[in-house]
Image (cartoon, rainbow, N blue to C red; front, side):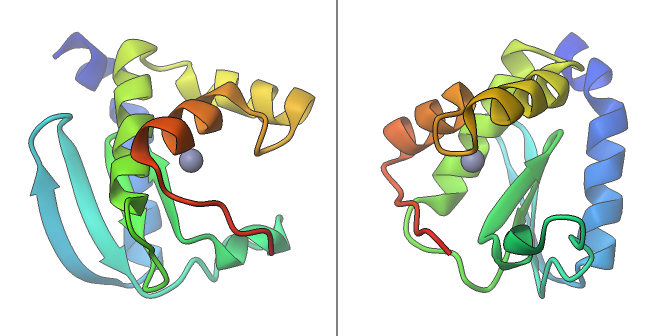
Length: 124
Ligand SMILES: [Zn+2]
């Protein structure tokens, strides 16, 4: 509960990202608590052109799934929600530092998510 409150700014940002990504379907997830939107595209992700082709993303307790998702991508994103519950508020900052230092695939948060969900990474 306390994590959910601390993560609220990110969750609100996630809902806004969901709206601009053109939501097509919505579902709730109980454990961890998450709002899951199936969206049309991440067209707005312009500062990192590679990311426009991302299959899914998580912002706070919001999971955004693109039409290109593969098997276990939802499980992968829900692990990022769990990480945000474990490390509330500052998780996105730690994630960004980790990505900056090690790159996306060697980021420990991604390693955990790919390892536990068993989904695959496809280089663009
Ligand atoms: Zn991930």
